[in-house]
Length: 158
Image 1: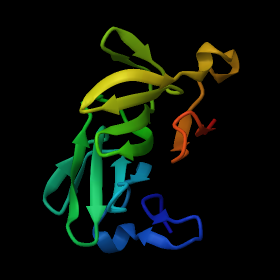
Image 2 (image 1 turned 180 degrees about the vertical axis):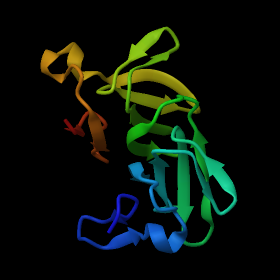
Image 3 (image 1 turned 30 degrees about the vertical axis):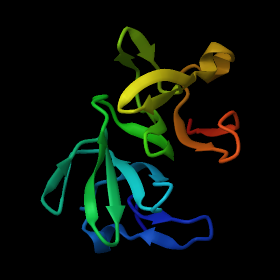
Image 4 (image 1 turned 90 degrees about the horizontal axis):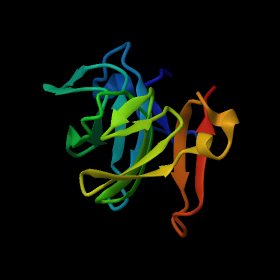
């Protein structure tokens, strides 16, 4: 097992980094699944060449057993993505691993950003605004209920 392997909650390995060609030393930092196909979408912690395609840490990479690796979405955030949840084909939630400027707004490591139709529409959640103990937190996972987008679960990695 290595930091680029992906498992289900039942412990089944659904992506074996070695067998699909993810180089040693490359770690997966965020993961989600495409709703209709169950393809895996993930981000990595460094620039990586996967079967001739070069991906950056702010790219969302799609992997399927049929088509291999391809670009799901280039976010252009210029920061590592460390949490991801795909809501539907045109909408996702993510968090970045550092503080960045998004337009004229400062986005922190604990913020959840919504990307809709290839444009950052709003901040879905910024916990430090309501609870100062979240300031400088490291949000590392996002999950949203399929029945209610108001039910967001997230994990502080620090």
